[in-house]
Image (spheres, rainbow, N blue to C red):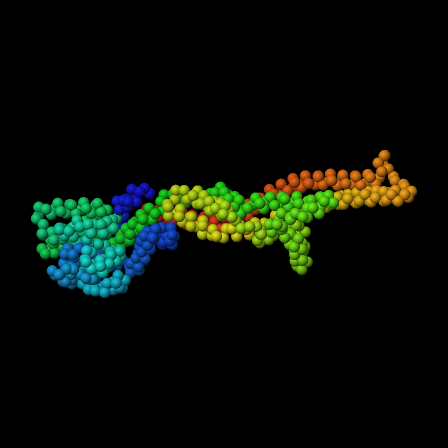
Length: 565
């Protein structure tokens, strides 16, 4: 909806037919009820309050049926409301005098009786019963309101209250004040679009020269059209001479007989509310968070959560453990001086977990997995630093900016609130997600074979070294040389010592190369698992709430367009 449309709502509202079926009105009220349910924090306070008030008023008024038509006589001080009230009814029920204001509280006349419950709902205690069921105005409830320009605030408040709930209006104006700004800006423009339930009585017409009466009536009609009340009938009247009173009474009788004023009034109210809601929701239809935006958020949270550090640790742990199992035994002690990368991060409880799984399986009759897996709830990693925290905030802002493109400012702010609603939970949730990932730490089967080979080579080396020591010791003691077998020209003890050492070192180099390749693969696998885990956190704490909010906004927009037909 354009800004021009939004600032000129009265002129764009279409005049609704008074023949709208009651079931269609009921359908619109059901739509309004759903709008009211979705309005909090999605519509501005004024629009939400207006929708709520319109719904409550409509339901309250419909609860008292359409047998009676409530018509309010409204006007300024001295316009002749009370005299018009008496003239229409043919009885002196409202006091008329020089003292102003004459009407201090609303007064109602029930033509034919039977509207006590309705007047109780309207909170009008001063009431009169006029005529019976045969009266030409039977079914009319005529209400004489206080002056809308009264100096008494309580009088003006009562006018404001009742004009929101009556079925139809008769605005009584006089030739001196019919163009008064307080009337047009405070009331007539406020009810633009309610032409079908509005009449205007240009009273005290006898005070104008006859030559000026037509021009005054035409000017008033033009002013009403500018207020958005196009096609409203202006009836010149004079309660002093009786001019125009019969025409006004006949107009009222026709409208009461139709019993359509209530539906027409409520329909106009719904048009008014629908226009406000339509302006608030705009023309852009909200969609779910784009998949690429959700993926970007998951990646951003993964970076902020230090997934790369953990993934690299998984690869480093694979290499470290490979050297401890299948490395050259004489130098393995040096590797033990360095902490295991995963254990240092609190991400390796494999041994205790495996033993616990085996004990649990023994108790339950099952079998343990036998796999070196990691399943922990928390890590001992450092809490996210300022840079990581800033990265999370930037990722959330970017998601909202991409998702809220074209949406009203209020909705953009609302999505920002939803994105940040559980912001404080993100660091801990991400840490738990990383800690609970089953990282790929299974021991390859070839490690055992390589370890056995290493121990064999080491044993051969030790045998050779011991043999050479014995030979050397015998020679040093001057004893006869021991027979030493040879392979070619190389003594067997030397071959065993040197061959065992060289073979062990070569196998260690091969194991190291294979472990580096396997470590890279483990890092890649771990990174994917960790990103998936952080993506689950992003979905749970951010994407799902935002998608739910976007769905509610989309539904509100659909309802607004259905209501604003």
